[in-house]
Amino acid sequence: MTTITGTYFKGRLKLDRSVKITKPVKVTVMFENDVDETGLKLTDFSFSKMQELLKDCKTSFADEVIEERRTSV
Image (cartoon, rainbow, N blue to C red; front, side, top):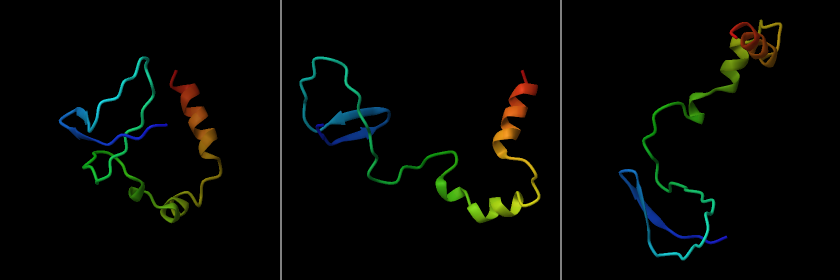
């Protein structure tokens, strides 16, 4: 595995140095600074709140999802 730093800006990734690659390779991009993302974050969830909301539920979440998918087809 090779690690190369770079800069991402406006949809483009610029590597700090060139790399000679002769075939497609998988890459992982990790943003070092907080990025303003839209959508849900892990901090939006609370295990204890979910337990409270589901305390009277008599079935499993998985069973409900399966049933919903069967009836929506």
